[in-house]
Length: 204
Image (tube, rainbow, N blue to C red; front, side, top):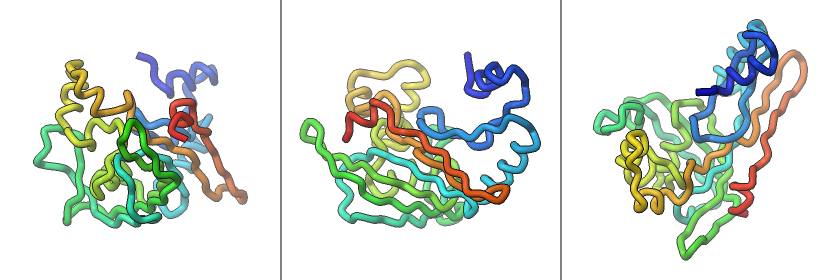
């Protein structure tokens, strides 16, 4: 199977390319790549300090958020009750995590309510945005792990998704898009952006 970093190294014609940040498999958007090990180390240390980098995401979630802005301050850790080994959850003894959510647009499709939100994570925990949005009752559309039925994920990985599962997901991939990444580095301000693709524009 091809990989993003494999394609990068083919493009560069060397094995020097390094991923600085990563996205969940189905998340679209900005991935920062360094052409060499020295820059990768510098930027990796920068990105690891959440307060030094501003990340902006778009998400489409189930339901209409009542408030225009929500701040979710809820610690995250392993979900020991889940059948999905990689699943985390909100738990009292977890690692601190904070996410700000702003409503972009409230939508309806086929009579069902959805909300397009702009999301800014203040910390960088695994699956943070997906967990926090599900925690407040608005899971991301198409999320197989943190949606309304985690067993959909197990059927997905065993290639046994049903038609009912696909209808429940609404979308083939979860609707989370890393739209921008900004930081100060080497004496200047850097911002990298990824425009919305056609699948996103259909929601506008």
